[in-house]
Structures are given as structure tokens and as C-alpha cells.
Amino acid sequence: MIINWFPGHMTKSLREIDEKINLVDAVVYVLDSRAPFSCINPALNKVIGSKPIIFVLNKADMVPEREIKSWVSKLTLENTKAVKSDSTVSNSAKIVAENLRALCSDKIAKKKARGFNTVIRAIVIGVPNSGKSTLINNLCGKAKTATGNKAGVTRGQQWVKVGDYIEVLDTPGTLYPKLDNYEVALNLAFIGSIRDEVTDTYELSLELIKRLNRLGDALVARYGISPPDDPIAVLGKIAAKRGFVLRGGEPNIERASAAVIDDFRKGRMGKIILERADEYGKTLFIR
Ligand SMILES: Nc1nc2c(ncn2[C@@H]2O[C@H](COP(=O)(O)OP(=O)(O)OP(=O)(O)O)[C@@H](O)[C@H]2O)c(=O)[nH]1
Ligand SMILES: [Mg+2]
Image (tube, rainbow, N blue to C red):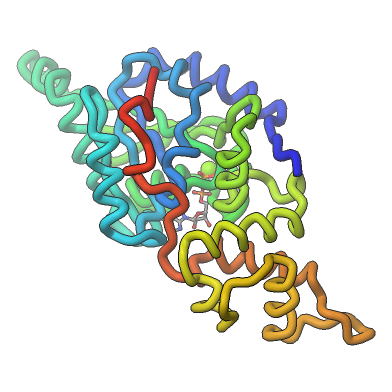
């Protein structure tokens, strides 16, 4: 299966991020905690240059707590901070605002000494569906940006005020111009960062089943299928368990494929991480 998705709006979006980067004090880089490595996009790293970064390990509710801790320490580097967030829970993103203020404390103090208040500006970037717009709504306590459970919801940049002293710029999710690392492409597809229309649901579900079998017993827990089996047979078993049958009594494999992917994406298989911090070296993030 070939996975590639870099529509025209992403080229435009990368260009627009490049145009705005000099206007902002910091970058809020939103990663999906299930696959943080795949969410770090080399095309964006160059654009960010030397700006201070706050990595947000978003969707932290979907992975085990200890894994998040490892990622937070891995991504806390010189000029970068890392925090976790479950942006669907109100107020959980306020740590991002606190870190923004801390990162810009020099600027705030200098302005204050001259009798002014400072507005801190940050750009929010990340792969599609990582939760950028949800995080922004959480930060300002209102639904100011459109969100949705599919890739490519935000289509244009939008400034949003967070209180009186912070402004954040929402951006459309961007991917790599070329997804030449197949593991990365699969992980992005599993977490819903790639439009379903450009992947093959059946093939993707087989890859997901293979991966889940390698990672543990998620399929056993969700569907009571034991022991882990050949992926095609697993789809047949899921169809039988869930009562997905076609008119002639044949198992409805297509529905079973879609169900596995949907169950994984919605966290119905429990807390699962696809990429653990200790699998990646120090060169993980190069600008
Ligand atoms: N479980 C969980 N779901 C989240 C979290 N943050 C966002 N979501 C969900 O993820 C989906 C995508 O959220 P969006 O905020 O639209 O993502 P986005 O990064 O703005 O996506 P694009 O605009 O397409 O680039 C929505 O269904 C959100 O409810 C989180 O921390 N935990
Ligand atoms: Mg969005």
C-alpha cells in the first residue's frame, strides 16, 4: 500500500507558517502522544528555526502515564519545553499558557519596566488531527476554532486571543511532502492524521492488526480473540463476533476492517502507544 498525502493546501500552509514565524515569540508544537516521533515533521523543523518550542504531548489520556513521562523528558531540551495535555478536559491546557509566559519572561519583564504590558504571540503547529484546534479552544475556554475527528479540519490560519496577554495562531495540519518512511506513514494513518480517502481501509487494518499483535493483547481485550492470529483470520473473527455479515451469510470483512481502525482511534482498546521514547536517540529533533 502506498501512503502519500500532501494536498495543495499543505504546501500553502507550510509557506504561511514560514511567513508568520518571525512574528511570534514561540512555537506550540502539538504531537499525538500515541506516535510522537512520527508527528515531528522535518519539513516544519527547518521552518521553525531557532524559535523556542513548547512540545505538547496531546491525547495523553490515550497512552500509559509512564510513557508520557519518558517523552516529556526526552523532548525537554535546550530551548524546548514539553508538557502533556488531554485537551478534551477543560483547563488541562493552562500549563501551555504558563510555559509560554515562562519562556517569554524576559520580554515581559523588559516591557513592564517601561510601563507596558506585553502580548505574547505563539503559532500552533502539528500534523493533521493532533488536536491543535481543540488545544486552542481549551486554552481560551471557548470554542473559537473548528475541530473534528478527521484529518484536515482547519483550512486556514486563525488568530485567537487567550486572555489579554496571549494570542495564538491556529494552523492547518501539515505532513511531510514525501512520506518515504513506511512505518511513519502507517503510524500517521493509524492515528488518523492521513485522510482515509487516500489509504486502503482493508490493507491499513491488516497492518494495524499486525502491529497490535506485536504490542500486546489489545485485540484479545477488545474482541476476546485469542491467541493472536493471522491478520486476515482476525478480521474474519471480528466480523463473526460483532455480527458483521453480508446477505449471503459471508463475513463482512470491510466493516470489520473499519471497526478495528475506529476502535483503535477512539481508544476503545485501552491505552496504547505506538512509539516509545526509548526507541529514539538524541538526534530525534534536529532543526
Ligand atoms: N482523547 C483525546 N482526544 C482529543 C484530544 N485533543 C483533541 N482530541 C480530538 O482529536 C480530534 C481532532 O482534533 P482537532 O483539534 O480538530 O485537531 P487539529 O490538529 O486541529 O486537526 P486539523 O485541523 O485537521 O489539522 C477531535 O475529535 C478532538 O476531539 C485529547 O487530548 N484527547
Ligand atoms: Mg484544526
